[in-house]
Amino acid sequence: MDPKWNEDQPIYRQLRDRVVAMILEGVLGDGDALPSVRNVAAEYRLNPLTVLKGYQELVDEGLVEKKRGRGMFVNEGARVELLKAERGRFLDKEWPKVLATIERLGLDAADLLQQETNKDTGVDND
Image (cartoon, rainbow, N blue to C red):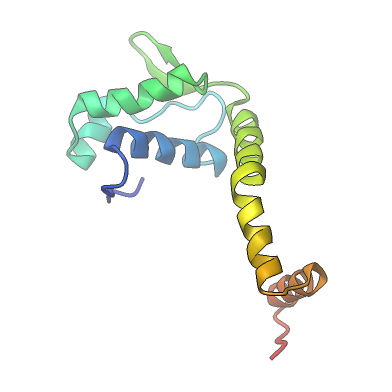
């Protein structure tokens, strides 16, 4: 996890988002234990209650399970659920902005796809 925090969001929320990113990226998989509240608090110099609040959000969302005396673990299927939710959020919130920018700039979808293909293969269009 990145030790830098921004001032736009509460730290517990940023911590929650970082764990979500770790799940989406496959760093944490189904059944994996989250780093302990004490370890995260000590490593990032946070109040343990702040860490616990971030973790509790994950529990409330059904992404993580709290096992008394053992810690917190990623629930089975958490990544699949997160991907579904993130895709929906992207299509509802981000894609309309991207599409508006594409149209405003007069870009063509086929040209954009070709540009990406060329970038992946190392071909230079310039």
